[in-house]
Image (cartoon, rainbow, N blue to C red; front, side, top):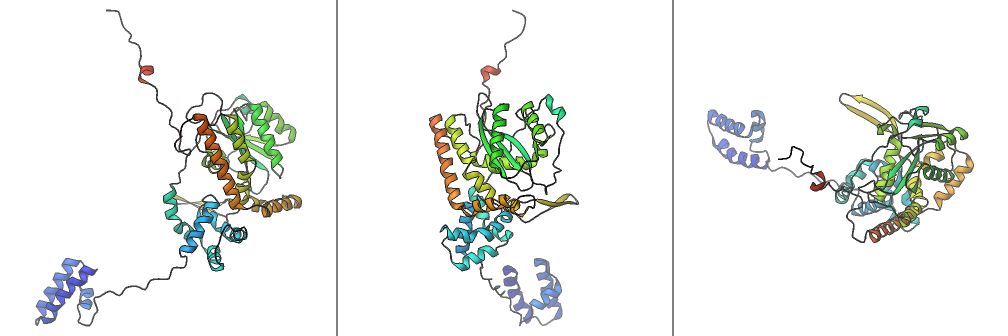
Length: 412
């Protein structure tokens, strides 16, 4: 536009000096052909009283300045980098508590702005920080089943999310780049209605050790179980767990073989609660097992269940070639259990007492300390400096000598 205006200034002098109408018409034709603008628009702009210097638009004052952004980034890190939709309810409830714990030294004005921020504004303000951190995602692997699965009914993802007590369970391998030998596995469980998560690390993946880990998780959960849903792995599809569910009156179901989306709830937790925390290294010692279980049984479960909001799908509608999904207001598993009418008042009172005693920033620091201890234990075991723990290890390729086949033919 600046170049067009400068060009029009030169032509304006010729246009005003021209005495005949034909000369003026030729000047207008030249300008319109070179700029692509319409003739009527050019006639209005070429008049002598029109100001060709564009006025600068008045800049809008910045509401969320550097102080607000700095506080937002700190809170975002404390609560493990959630998206804007999940961070918004955290800001509304946890800003004052963090100020009370002296984790945030901000003014009342900054605190008020943090509570007022929309989810879109939060994502926009954190866009640069996300690019700096290079947050990555990854996937896991399914396991086969056994003959007992013929007695266990198949359940898809069609859950009644209003009922509290139905659990999805899965096993996460910490084998690194090779499945040879014995290594640590994480038994990961989540409650469908609230999103409450519990984990327990075991050495190997035997049926007995998996069952005992599940019993330890059951003692930690405050609500009653109504059903279990697993994949087709032999660590779950066995007589031990089948008889236990029959004896306790639990509904035992399984997913379809090689259909990971049937276990969508627990597969999501396997990334956010296990892989994102522990990475893809190989853990196979008792020292590493003790550190991981110390994390699962204390700080990590409290941090995830009391301070990490969960979004639930409300409706799904296909519009043309895309699917439009609507979610409810993000709330933590703790908040969802408090809102449920299926949880007794005593359990709600106990949950509230635990929540009031927790400092999320202190929990995050404790988690980081234990993770550092875990990686130091791993490096001491390997006696070398390991690369990125959150990147998948690439299996060693087969050597050319092993691939070489002996020559077959008649002797010469």
